[in-house]
Each structure stands twice: as C-alpha cells, then as structure tokens.
Length: 119
Image 1 (cartoon, rainbow, N blue to C red):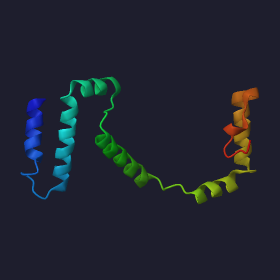
Image 2: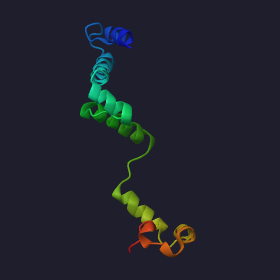
Image 3: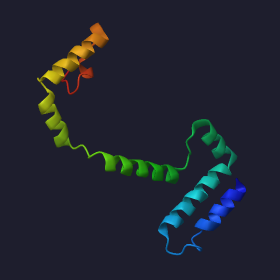
Image 4: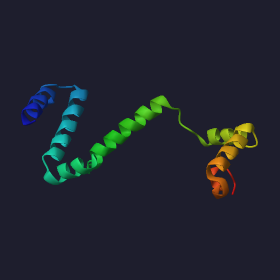
C-alpha cells in the first residue's frame, strides 16, 4: 500500500502538475486518506463504521453528494409543496392512500401518517 501511495503521490504532486487544479485536489484528498489510514485510532474508527471523523473530508463528500443529487432532481420549494397539497387533498390519490394506510395499520392508523393531514 505504501508503494502505491508513493507512486500516486508523485504522479499527483502539485510540483509535477503546476496549474492542474484537479490533480491538486486529488493530491490533497490522498493526503487526508493517508492521514486517516496512518492513524491507528482513525483507522479503527473507519474499519468499524466505514466513516471518518474528518470534517473537511466528510464535508467534501457531502458536497459531492449534494451536487450529484441536485443534478438529478430539481430543488423542492415551498410553492411546490403547496401545489402538491392542492392537487392531493380531496382527490382520489388521497383517498386511496387513506384506504391503504387503514388496511396496513387498522385501528392504529394515525392522521399524521397521511400526507399533509391536519391532525
């Protein structure tokens, strides 16, 4: 693993790739990964949970996921929710959902389980 790290670090090093922001970012991420793998406590935490206690790295990953999600789905606005509610309440889809919930939960049916109910 050390040999692979050194080869990759040499290839991505900013001095070998002046002006290449992508290589610089990958090099920085590689440094963070190595800092986690090289620390027994951080490595143990990662081995147990699959997560790292690195705010920057976690933040980068979260931002990447958010960007990916946003590229696939439009942002839901308050107006979208109100439009959904207006098109849902009192229509067949609401009645069908209520019937399905009743069949599933019988007497334990709670109104808050129904979308946009006012219980």
